[in-house]
Each structure stands twice: as structure tokens, then as C-alpha cells.
Amino acid sequence: MIIDNSDRKILIGKNFSEPVTAPAVETEDQKQLLYNICKTIRDGGYNEITQLMGYIISEDPAHISNYNNARTLIGRIDRDEILEDMIKVYLEDLEAKYGKDTDK
Image (cartoon, rainbow, N blue to C red; front, top):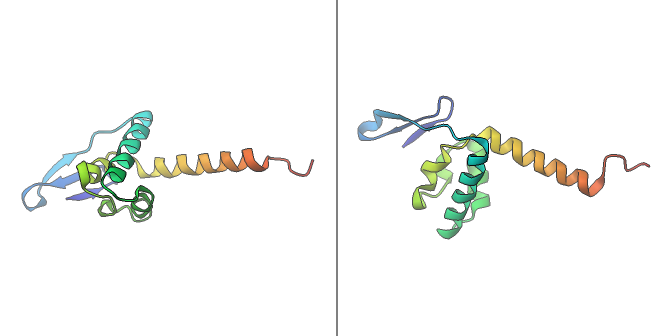
């Protein structure tokens, strides 16, 4: 299987010649799907954090376990949106912990 995230095509089948377009997933659905993928990875006995890190850094779905179709499902999620949400949550956590104006 080859996934090209630039146009959301997944190439599967004999000789990798039958293109199938991955359906777009809405933002909230992506969050639920990502949760399900992480749960599947954990259920398969793998570490979801290291697998997601490998996928996010390289954009190579081979970093995701194929257990219960997790590797195929990750192709339905917008990698940039995952990164954006992670950074947003991380910065909000920093804001809550340290506050904007620590000099006052």
C-alpha cells in the first residue's frame, strides 16, 4: 500500500495500480478516529505515542501498526491538523501553568 497525502490517494491492489481516494473526515470525526486508532494500537500491544511520532515526523504510515487496519485508517486523518491541535493544546497547557504575565 502506498499513501500519498498530498492528494489523499491510497494506491492498493494488484501492482499498486488501482487508486482509491480516502474520504475526507471532519475535524471532530478526525479526533474520534485518532482516538480509535490509538486504542487499536494499544490493544495490539504497541506504543501509540512512538508510532504516532514516527508517522507525524516522516509521514510514512509504515510507522503505524497494521493491527485492526490502523495503518489504513491513519491515512484518513490530516497530519497537519494533528500537529496544529497538539501544539495548541500544549501551548494552552503552558499558558494555564505559567500564565501570560508572570512579571505582575
